Image (cartoon, rainbow over all chains, first blue to last red):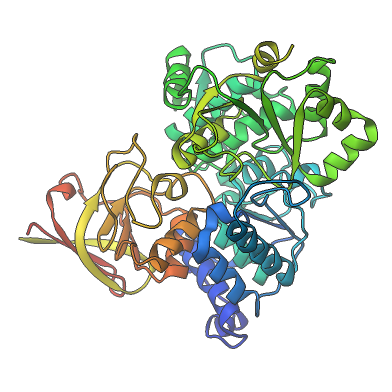
Length: 386
Length: 137
């Protein structure tokens, strides 16, 4: 099967509109071939990953700086968290901060919205259900498909960048309605209570499912946004699946029970306790900040606690008094950044990190080399506040 | 003895090298050291192996969307695979990373017996005709 390009798209590929635009079309063509697309279609919103210097490194900085000379975004484009909160004190190296600012400048030049958030769905009025978008950042792509009814493939940083520059994406996979009907189901054979339970379910499912859409059955119909985010982030971290659904299907079941839960915990829960609590991967939204402040209820954290959230929601929480309550409890609210691959959480500084995020646990263990105590929020509050 | 397998061309070009074969997916962001090209994930069967100058044969990439930059960084740092072959469905991360890094990328056509592929040592990736040629020595 061939990806049919219009004359204008062929011209763009042949560098008629410059080298940078040609690179964007080259990316779209490669992912179009990979996903058996017949053509490119317009997208109405793009969300980009690849903003934190810790994730894209020197090569990424060079690529963005060079291409930002020519690349311009044609559709509204939000961007993921960067490495740190520039309004706060830190002991990061000057090189890190310099490189991070180069990245920020390059995205600004190309025309991005400076959201620095992995939860654009809690900050912006996104297009209506049924619209095509292009979302990198695995939790955001899964949330967009599964909860918001938007249509996106599980894009990469570079494929979403190509969509921002061209306003297009391949018509394939989860952009085709029939793919959005699950063909495989995870049969939940254990009781799920906490947000962590849903994260564990997501992580197991990502590993077990090769399909683009998975059903969890009606059991997940009523889950709140905290649990949905935990599920979406973990599903996106361990696999290729880009959507979950509550539709019932017959046959093709994979069981998820106590044993499967244990296998995920055995892999990711690598220490009994830690010296810092990290909350927010994905970043916490207004509902979760309020929930947390209610659970703390005037007590104080007995360990250092980092709470990651978008800046606009921090400002909202300041106006409502929620931010002050969390800060009075000893919480350090950090904006524009996130737990995953944060330079603020290194193995030089910390022996162990306490978190309820399965996604954070994956990257802390495997990328940052920091041991993780993986436990649910209620237990964190019970064990580490007084 | 050599053996030719039909493939779909995702990113064109030609490459050759020793084969590095796995049945396990790879998370390029969390599992590969970008300066050395070594696979570092203790839970991965290729842990300790270097992808540099090899023809990497694996099912597909999983996890982070930033993995595309990781593939590009491996190339920029001179430690990338010379060619890549996906044995299952090619994912968007690998396809876009290889497109920007100019690493030839093929996807094996599904109807072929690849049970013994790990017994072959050398590979030629032909991203023009869409053939993966593998040899025992």
